[in-house]
Length: 473
Image 1 (cartoon, one colour):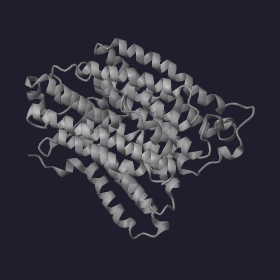
Image 2: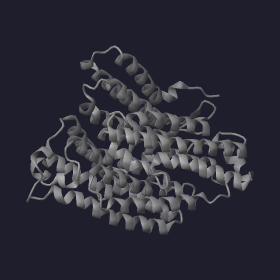
Image 3: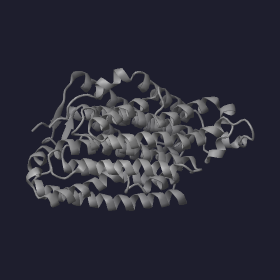
Image 4: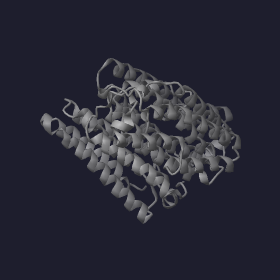
């Protein structure tokens, strides 16, 4: 049994920083709580360095009775999660500075990111569920961190739906355990094709319910707009980005490694969910006035595109590359848009952004890059990600889904332009207080995220080879 702890340096760095931050926060004076934020940033940097070393040396392995796989998908997922977490920490500096629970805020971020990483490399149903819980419970607390009416309501809805779908997911894992007489993916891969069709089908659907909740896909998407609107903007940025990375890679690994030969037609099921999710997200976003709710429904539509990769996980070699590249591009682009919203705390509606290009040209430029990036406009990274995923869908025999995705992409341009049009309006600008900035950290984060989005698009040819590599059995 491989118990190599060195393979888990990124996860251990987050865990160590969370424990140290919790202890340090109990003794540090209020004005020194920023040290915990620095500790979180250092943990991210250590994890990124360790992941880069692992990728350079090619030390792919499974550890602890094959419960956790360290392969290309895990390593790229680590880079995305840790890089995005670093942006979220920077985004949060001015929103929680001086708060009496500032240190606990960063500890919760570290713990939920640790759960996300656990899901990314999960090669066992028990590890998958443990990662799901660890990614979820701290996120509930973060949602209600402000302790205001909207935040508390959002946290309650998030928790109740999480409990419902988490219980359903656990029941699905139990059914698959009963059908396959084990929880490890290699064993399930061998045993499930000979198991009862009904037992496997019900277990798979129940297990997918929990993952779809974490991803924010239909029909488990109801929490996304409420949490995005009710939580602090930095928390909304986190919730709509990082958990999706872990859950989508976990879903891809589950389908590819444990269920490739079962009789259940899960590719069609995932394809239908993807189609409904992208369409509903776009339709709901069309006439939103709140910028946070618009981004929430935009997130749902993006999930629909991302689900196309798991739908063809076993049918196209392009699926993994498309999924990983799209996740990286989506993470930085979405965080860039939320960073602008964070930097302008008094601009809550689309009308509040009138005249922003004249008063805050740098923020307006970032918003243009990020919103058009979410559409999939070249030369941003999302464009390459969509191109790869759409190609994978066609290669995997789901041409109808690719065509629907293209139609939805064109339609999504409408509501992103509804936001951008007021930004460049010269007549009747919004009152000056609406464009009052929060500080410097969110602005720097916005510029950095937009630059990364463009870099992923321009340097896509160099990035794509990093996403290739077979999943470990």
